[in-house]
View 1 (cartoon, rainbow, N blue to C red):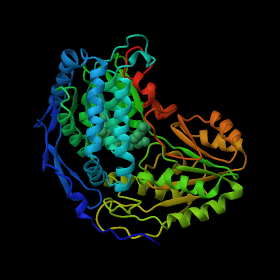
View 2 (view 1 turned 90 degrees about the horizontal axis):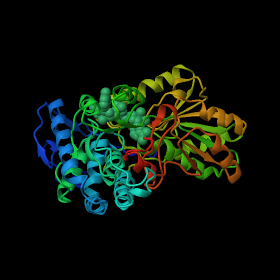
View 3 (view 1 turned 45 degrees about the vertical axis):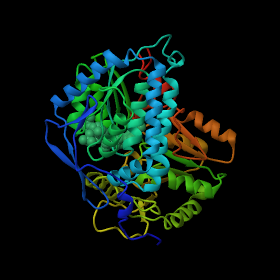
Amino acid sequence: MGFLEYAPAPESRSILALKDEYGLFIDGAFVEGRGASFATISPADESRIATVAHASDEDVDLAVAAARRAYTKVWSKMSGRDRGKYLFRIARLVLERARELAVAESLDNGKPIKESRDVDVPLVASWFFYYAGWADKLDYAGAGVNPKAHGVAGQVIPWNFPLLMLAWKVAPALAAGNTVVLKPAETTPLTALIFAEILQQADLPAGVVNIVTGAGSTGAAIVRHPDVDKVAFTGSTGVGREIARTVAGTGKALTLELGGKAANIVFDDAPIDQAVEGIVNGIFFNQGHVCCAGSRLLVQESIHDEVIDRLKSRLSTLRLGDPLDKNTDIGAINSAEQLARIRELSQIGEDEGAVRWTADCVIPEKGFWFAPTIFTGVEASHRIAREEVFGPVLSVLTFRTPAEAIAKANNTPYGLSAGIWSDKGSRILAVADRLRAGVVWANTFNRFDPSSPFGGYKESGYGREGGKQGLAAYLKGSAA
Ligand code: TAP
């Protein structure tokens, strides 16, 4: 109970001055693409938001050539302090246009406006502020004395945090002195295009950042382009593997941020109410479209029933519906394809013998929706325990001892993140030390800060984003 019916809130949308058609942003200007165009739609009601150009290989050539010219003639000659001034300016403009960016993000992606307004957009600004401060301090970035940029960076990002993933990539790349060709995901190009307008407002020299919209083929054209020096990719492990094969032997630098299947481990001495909030935030934030989502709950056997009861009653208070409504907790699934995958894996969960519980809610007639779902009785061998669902689906497993919790948590091909809930600091430190995960949260989950490096082990990829490590990934002589 407690779910609202879908009710559009058109007044929020009215602060957006969207164009009906968007071209590609190449060499400081919006230009027509040479390929076909495509519609970007609202996943909440399937309505067309705008038509967007699909960059062809020739368009990618033009974007890379513009980035190369800008690198050679302008950006590589500019002092770090001046590059920093542009980054500060971009950060301020993001804050000035924060409401508009938040509405555009929720409209295009389906995420609740309170998340895009309070999490995504403020983090985007903080990433630019943080890396602006690094631009004149590169000697301290861990890549030797007087470190040099790679040159042209090709960046391909996913749809789950469209503008934030852009910020994670563009801010350190520019601070380190690289120029950029970036492709947003096909289903969420809108905020990257508004960001291009912000770059114009900031008077960023032409060609320093180029945004080419399109599908996977556009991303592949960037990755294989011979004049791209550094490739940075965030997305699925499958596409990451393909990119690693393409880049192998070319001398290009590569960072990969891929999938995850994080364990959120709750010990019997944990503050239960806090842990339940952490479990909800861990898997239902952004509809579970989070690479580091706490998608596997590992709960100590003695408190299993209590935690699950409290979790169910908490989930019954969440509101699913219009992403632009400020009271919405659970927004729309980003695409029909993603919804089909979530449905398929959930069905497999049932077929394999796990017990499915779904929060009682009214699903809107149009759009892509999936109610918060919990599977109990999940075995380590079940596909919902091993594969990334990338949706609002929690798989619950139990353990008896810390050693068993650690073994189960590490029993995954991924290694991006994990959470530990316990009252004992010594236990948290001991367990964290033995988890093969790039980020371990203690008594919290899904917290991000630009000064903190983020990235994975094993099939979750390599290289780090954020912090000084994230800067080093855009400098020659660093590990990434
Ligand atoms: P992907 O299908 O891998 O897409 C990511 C991006 O790559 C999109 O822009 C996509 O274009 C493009 N792409 C597709 N095929 C390509 C190819 N052959 N060569 C180059 N680029 C290509 O992933 P997704 O479905 O958008 O995102 C979900 C996945 O990303 C999840 O597995 C999630 O865990 C992972 N993810 C990881 C992180 C971090 S930080 N580790 C963060 C967010 C997401 P299209 O838009 O046309 O598909």
